[in-house]
Image 1 (cartoon, rainbow, N blue to C red):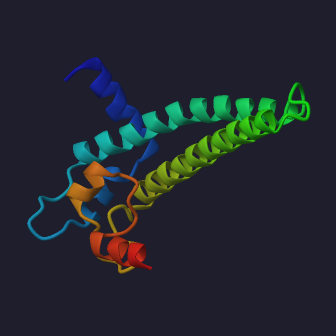
Image 2 (image 1 turned 180 degrees about the vertical axis):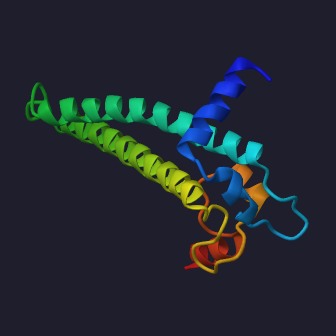
Amino acid sequence: MAKRDVAVRAATRKQFPHLVRDVKSFPVRDGEEPWTVEEVEELAHGLIEENARLQVEFAAADQELSALLRDSGEGSGDDQADSGSSALERDQELTLVNNTRDLLAQNSRALDRIAAGTYGVCESCGKAIGKARLQAFPRATLCIDCKQREERR
């Protein structure tokens, strides 16, 4: 086992002290193997690393948006094309900030669910979300059936 893997495992176990006990209660769908501690540690570590990256991106995007809002009237004069271009740029930065904020919240929610021992439980019906789904999309809070039902609305 590499030094990095040992350090990751130690940090994850410190952040999630009951993981060894809780992982046994994480549900899986029929035909899936039960979760292992190593799988959940890897998943949690990925979420933690993504959060760190997203926080940097969020700070940069937020700073850029603040600068655009502060300087929104400078240099544009009365030209409608310049004003429209500035508005589009502000909208794009605002969208980026909001998307990054949403991803951070989703990651934090997933990490909270791991810590609480409720990871893998559909928030709508209470059934297993599915191990394969969570490995592909660790922020999922709904099983496939409930997600499809939600999207049809």
